[in-house]
Length: 476
Image (cartoon, rainbow, N blue to C red; front, side):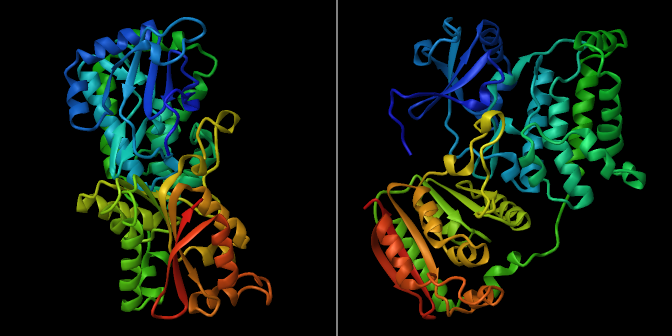
């Protein structure tokens, strides 16, 4: 999980704004600023709103750093370099649940309101400008702040609609999960894509007429006009900062009203229906606790197939932070709401299909890193997961083990559960498959695969007799 201190890696996601580029130098996150952006930064530090929001944890902590820490831009040294706090885990909006995206949107709008009142705005409106400390959203794009210019609209409005508001409308009003839509396009959902779904009476649903149909029509009307011409028309019409503030407040009221509480899914009630006895659960919890405390305190734990977060909470007692991955957006949303209510700040719940994890996206496939590239952990929990991948999704068992080992830092541990072929859950999955399709799905074969990728340090057969837990030290 660490890098060589001398290693300097540009952040691909920042390539679109050459005025301020993000670099990773060892464990540090740095940002180079050109002269104009450096001037904006100095003015920003003199405002009242910015230090207050940083102190409240709503904007990532940022300070000046020596310019020599990052390479010069096109031969010219950076006018200033900033050092940002390091976010525990970088996630993407298509890995968030509905309520997570809504809460991130509300924070973005709160920050924008405060900035406008103090003479600043944000030139971007992207959902990617926010990350998470556990269940707390945090704004990270310091380079987005710039002084407001009277007579100009919020430059980030279209981006906010495409990456935040339209996904929320899609799910709140139509019950359609937004995650596949956002994953398909790094720039978000275009108005033209969404408008056909909101015809007839649906046009009258909250936010649709103003922010989808009218906004889309205005985009088409101004398509041939230059940005300068549009801004001149707005100034001539008396557009001012108060109108921008009123627009932001209106969007904020709309977002607060949007709600989505899906019906209970199969996975929502999995802990009750999965067939574990009380003795199995107790033994499993003891094994997981022992595995997480066997060596140095883990900085990051991945809980794959987290469901209601039972083992994520257990891991959070012994690790700096936990990434809890679950496929069902409804389950993740409920887990997020529960963790927020509990005040749990070490667990980040994410929506992710383990058989189809987030790939790299954007320009050249590297602008947004794939899950596997981001997810190296000191410990990986794969509890009641392997049979779903190997039998339910037809992933070859060696590939499953390779992937788990690849997510684990050298010397880290994979805590994995093997569900025997005779287990009722495995039998249920096998019942829908042709006979003889999984000849290698056996305990002895599984153990050989584990041993080839590390050292099996501990094992425990649960009292039921049809499930075995393993702690394997990768590369050990």
